[in-house]
Image (cartoon, rainbow, N blue to C red):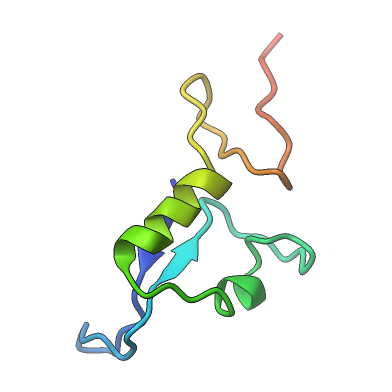
Length: 79
């Protein structure tokens, strides 16, 4: 599932006054909006704003366990 995170240090203390919206998948494709280089540039002032973006960008498909995104294929049904 997509989520929101605030950068923190090794003692789990916040290091920043912004939040990041993370996709529900890891990708090496730099053109994908979920690539870490793009995630790190999108900063939100609140956790709610970051989660709102994540929910709109990577909605949960109730019929699938595969995350959906405009840049990811839909889940395939088993034959």
